[in-house]
Image 1: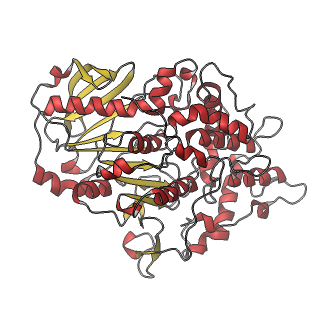
Image 2: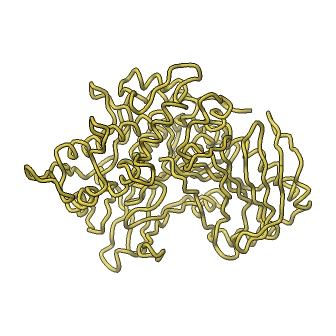
Image 3: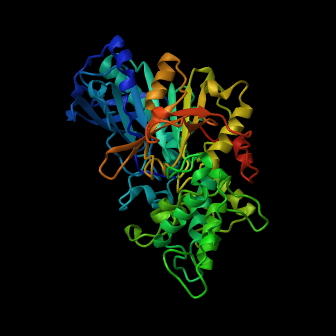
Length: 534
C-alpha cells in the first residue's frame, strides 16, 4: 500500500526526441537560486542551491520549502536538461525528504529535472512512513499530506526551473506508487493542469477505507490473546498450495497467476491432522485467518467495507505486511499503519478518535471515517478537465500486491470508464502485472516501469499497447521478461521459445466479459471530490 520505494524510471525510449529537441543550458548561476519565489496562494523559500554530481549527472541541487513547511529536493541538470520535469510521489505517511533519483539510461540519464517532497512534515520515527503522531493536532500538516503538498511543490519546481533555464518545462510528469499513486490520481482529479502525464501505481485512492482494510488484516490474523494466529513459517506452504491448485489455469505453469480471480483455492485444504501443528499445514484458526484475509473486510451483515480482499498468490508478501516480524518490533505494517491512522489522522481534530484495538467494522464507523477521509481520498470520477487538457494516465497494479488489493483499482477504472463520454482507453489505461508485489518485488516478475510508455504517449501520441515487466533474481540478474498488455488483455504463450522471454507472448482478450464494478458501501465516495489548494 504505502511503499517507501520511489518510482525510478529509465527513459532510453526518448533518446531520439531528446536529440531533436537538444539540451537547454542554464541562464543563471546555481547559487543565484537562493531566494524566495511567489507562487499562487503561497511562497517558496530556496534555502540551498549547490552544484553536485549524481553518478554521471552534473546538476544544481536545490533544497527549500513551500510555506508553511513542505520541504522539497529539486535536481536541475546543468548540461543535459531537455525540457522535461518528473516529480515523484511520497510513500506511506511520508515524513522524510528523499533525494529524487535521476532516471538511469546512459546518454539520456540527465535529461529530466526531478523533485521529491516530504509532504509537509518531518518524522523522527525509525520508519517515518509508518508514523502518524505528527498529525495529532496539526491540521495544516494533515492538509499537506492529504491534498496540498504535491500541487504546491509542482508550482515551486516549475517556477525555479523557469528561473534557472529561462523557460518552464515543456513537459511535466508525475509518478508514484501506493500513497504516491493516490497523489497521482488526486493530481489528475483536482489539479488537472499540473502535469501532462501521470503514473498511478497501486493507488491508495480510497485512503480512509483502505486503512480500515489494514485494520481488518491485522485483527483477522491476531488471536484473542493478542498473539499472532498466522505466522511467517506457514506462508510458503500456503503459497505453494495455491500455485499447485491454480498455476495451470492460465495455460502455463510458470510460478505466477496471470489472473488470481480465477483461483478458488480454499486454505482448508492444508488443515493439519488432529493433534498436529507443523509449518507444512494450517491449524483451524490459521485456516480461518487466511480466509478472512482473502475475503476482505465486511460488517456483521456481509456488507463490503472495501472492494476486495488480498488475492491468492500474494501469500509470500504477507510476512512483514500482514504477519508480524521482528523488524517492526513484533508488529506488522498493516497494524502500525492502521493504529497510527486511527489514533492521529482518521477523524477531525477535536473529535473522538479510535485505535486498532477499538475500531469497529460497521457501516457507521465507515461513514465516520469518511468525514476526514474525503479530504485525502482520490476517488472522483470527474477527470474530464485532465482529459480535455491532453493529459495521459497510466494506472498499474501488481496482482500479488500484499497491501493494496488489486481489484480496488479495477473497480475504480470500470467506474471511470462508465463516467467517461467516450473510450477511456484513449487517455487512461490500466496494466495488471502478474506476480508483482506492492510497488515491486515478488516471485517471477519483480519490476514494472511505465515511464517509457508515458513519454511516448504524451509526446508522440503513441498509446501503449504493451509494457515489458522484468524479473530479477537475488543477485540482480534478469531472469524473466513478460509483456503486460492494457487491461483486460492478458499475455498468452505462443508455444515456442523460452517462457521467460517477452518476445514469445501475444495479447489475448478475456474469455468472458469482465465485471469489475463491486457493490460496496464506499461507492458514494466517488461523488465527494475533496478540497483544492490555491
